[in-house]
Image (cartoon, rainbow, N blue to C red; front, top):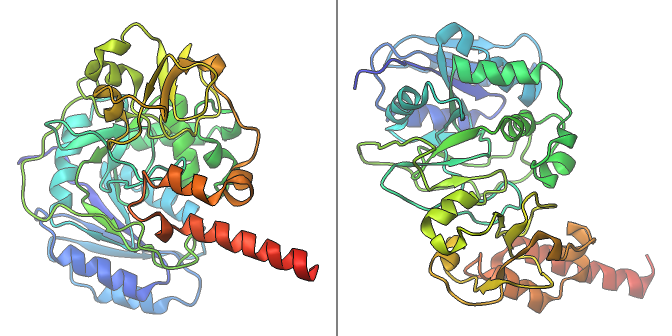
Length: 398
C-alpha cells in the first residue's frame, strides 16, 4: 500500500549482546519498504563497547542505518523518552527494546495503523505487542474478537510501540507539567504504589487514564518478548512469549466508536460495549470489575467478582473471556451485578490476602479459572515458601 508514513525504526539497546544479535536477526526476516531508516540507540555505561561493535557491523538492507552511542548513562526511562523524541525529526517512529523479536509483517501493520488512526484524538499510540496478561493484576487476559485485526485498551505498552508526532507530542506536553499521578482516579493502585518512579510507562499509563486515551493493540502480536535479565528484569522469564503474525494477511481496522473490543485501565471491557452484547443490562448504569481489582466505583451498579451483600443477578465464572458468562447468562455466584454500595471491600493488603490469609484450597478454587495447572503458578510457590519459612521461624525462634 502507499502509506503517508514511513516511520523510523529505533532499537533501544544497552548491554545485552545476545539480545541485540537476536532482534537484528529477526529484522533480517522483516518486510520493510526501501528507504526505511534504522537507528540503534545504545545507552552508555562505559563497558558495553561490544554492543556498539555489533550495531556498527550490522548490515541493514532497506536503507540508512545510524548508531547512536550515548555520551552518558541515561537509564531506561530517559533513554526511551529520548528515543521517543526522535519522532520530531522523522514524523513517526517504531520503538522496540532489544529483548524482542519482530514478525516479518510488523512494519506493514504499523504503517496501516498509523494511516488509519492518524486523526483519532482517542488514540495515544500503536502497540505491536498483544499483552497476554493484565497490568493491574498480572492475570491472563483474553480480549473479545470481532471482524477487525485489533482491539483497544487504556493500557500502555513498552514491548514494541509506534507513534505519530502528534501522539507523542501530546504525551510530552502532559509529561512536562510534572504531573502527580498518585491522585489520578481510575489508575490502578498497583501502578501508583508499586511501579517504580523511574518507569516511563507509569507516566504514560497516568496520561492515558487522565486524558481518556487508548492504545491500539493487534489481536495477533507483531512482536514477542524474551524477558532477558536486564535493568528491570532480575531473572529470566517466559511470560512475555506470545504467538506472532507469521503469514501475510490484510489487516482490518475500525474506529474505537465502532468496536466492541474496548478495555479500560484494568483491562475490563467498557460497560457500554458489554451492553451491545447483552441488552438485558441496558437499564443499569454500571461499571465492570470482573478481575476484582478496582479500589472504588463511580457508577451506581457494578458487575464484580468481589463479594457483595445483595446480588441482583449472579453469573458463573466459567467461560473465557469472563464477560461471555454474562453475555450467555450462565447462572452462578462468582460474578455479581450489584449496587456499588453493597460491594464488600476487604481492608487487607494484597500481600496479606495472598501470603497470609488465603487458604490453599481457596487459592486453587479462585485461580484455577485462570491457570490450567494452578500448581505451576509462581504465586502458589510463594505462598508455600512464605508459610514454610514462618513455620521454621516459629519453631527455631529466628
